[in-house]
Length: 283
Image 1: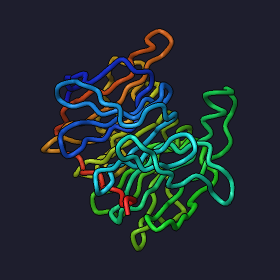
Image 2: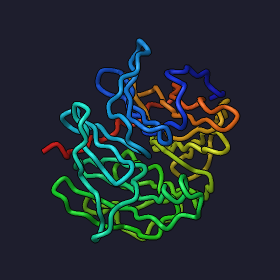
Image 3: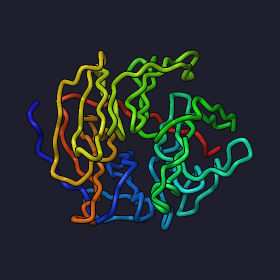
């Protein structure tokens, strides 16, 4: 596959994250640094789903079409522009922020905490974050408490492996036992610059590399079979959508020279993606 043509779905934001195609063919996305959760449809009109929420790095569609999203202070469930807190603390300590999240087949959530206050406000080295599993009933399990910077999460087609991108280290592979990730994980691919990821039906792991502004597709044996460079300051996160699941939505980020280059682009994959699971926190 040669580098595919791309289509700009929406642009003019700062640093976009959390792409997610819905049942109506529209795409949700966030502006991590500019704030807010948005939805864009085929006519190009942008709807604000949740205004002024900072640091949204991930979102899932819930089973009743509400949206579960991350951000400053933890996880919230969004319906009609109102955010209901779902997870605000761990072991009695307030959460600074949650970054990428992903639902599993049972509707539970995997996610990672991150110290965006240190990174974005104080420009300091952040403290370690936690990779966690949260059930709709509220059962919380910490899988790791030493994550450098938690990013993309996805599952193999057979559900046997969970992939987790740790920026600064690489992509980890967790074995799923009885439907839950069980450690210790194996380092699937060393990749300092990795960010969001998505999985296709062949078990290919697509990863965004934000500083390089490329996408890499890893085969299930961890060999790289393609690298796609795109003309944006950053490539941040990605998700499959469309009627045939061959639309790959990629969020982009700007920089000092191009501050409003953040948005969503669409490319056509030659391999269908896996449909993301829906979370189940609406009750």
